[in-house]
Amino acid sequence: MWGIFFKLLTFAYLSLVLLMAMDWKGRSDIGGGGKHPAMVDLNGVIAPGSDASAEKITTALQAAFKDKNTQGVVFAHQLPRRQPGAVARPSTDEMRRLRKKYPDIPLYVVVEDVCASGGYFVASAADRIYVSKSSIVGSIGVLMNGFGFHRPEWTSSASSGG
Image (cartoon, rainbow, N blue to C red):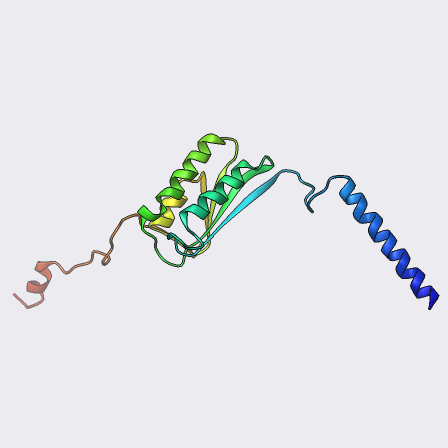
């Protein structure tokens, strides 16, 4: 029984020494506090009061760019539906402002699903946009009611035999 007690005591002592040594070197995180990419995740509808509101997006972007160890900012973009461009304008303006203020920090947008209308408007402020093969991208203020196919007049009269 004393053997188990001394083994546990030794384990606790070594764990404490290891934790103190890591703290003593000033390591505050697993990565060692070095350069890193900052991640800003946008999920949901861009709307006031939502998780993806312009205020929350701009606050997250400002924090990402202000961090002295940020090598680049990755803006993960996943919107459930198309967003109007006017709602996304404050986020886009802030992205452009931060890019001018911090020219050495690149900004990348990663699209997982849909990036249309306001979502594409936001993504257009980035240095590069990365999408998957199945992503839907584009359509800023464009209305598409069909593919533009129509039946010409002359085919209907030609088919009647005359």
